[in-house]
Length: 468
Figure (tube, rainbow, N blue to C red):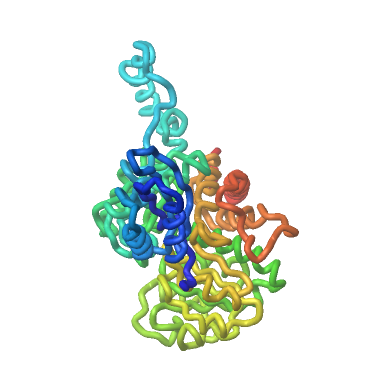
């Protein structure tokens, strides 16, 4: 029996022609059970001759498991499998977002005001005062979601076309949770200068820039240069969104295990964009002992040939300048944060941790270690997936952060705003309601974005970057 749970992410719907006699559906369901699938909705479509036509939805562990289940059902006498549809692919047919007008253009007057000749007067007003673009165009509520496809989820460098579904999904979440109009823009270049120039050229049409799935260390330079050039917020969500939610989860986890941040031994697995940002926010919040591990082990000042970001890590983590493997780093550690790739954390590393270990395994779609493998060892487990408790999902952060930044007409999203966002997320859960499987609020709790937006807007004003 597999220790990996089935997931709606690998669900499929079969169109079955089932011989219309007693016990046939039971044979199908028993076959699914024997193959450890999870049956869902069973809908009668029609009766056609001697067959009852049904649509049956099943959740599997992965694509191979789904194929195994479908193939076994095809072997049942009296069952015809006419079609197998992957539900995730069905959702993506034709894309997931669209643009809609805010008012109808159904009269000559409406056409004359929305477009020429009336629109010309609005253009002239903005030409005289560019600031009016914030109130007279969609700029005031628009964010560009920009990627080059070089570090998509945990899938790596898959290119701009393959990055589009993620950027569309990001735009959906901006709208659903923050009422922000976001646009997926995937650039067919991975040259830093070209990306900076492209974003700079398109920036007049946007109120903010969300950088997404751009590999380290280029992402650091791209974000820093754009922050210097543009007068609108630039935010690399893979770094800062993840860091904000990790900080919120850490705040609430420590309430449960009754430990203090400054007393923790923290291990971060992954020296990319998210790893660096998590370490920065933890340092700013008062952490004293953080080790960062990459594929070769603990990053220390003893190691030669480090790039700029890893050199920063060597100088700003590992206070005792330790060397060694991931397992050695985890010895007596309190908090283990994975922002790397699938299955890179062995069970033995978690077994070496201190009492009441906290493990955040955040790689998507497959975590650094499956929760099922350590549920008897770790006190608190979080992942980046929606099908496990404690999802560390950036959707808890970025919609509210940008909502607050846009409402404040902020010129930047600074450290004060990020920390305010983390505290707002953590405070969404009353202390008496906290539990090992409830350290962050639900991603569907729309009060979170409102709370975060208010905290971010206030922090923007307090820190002097608000212009409204």
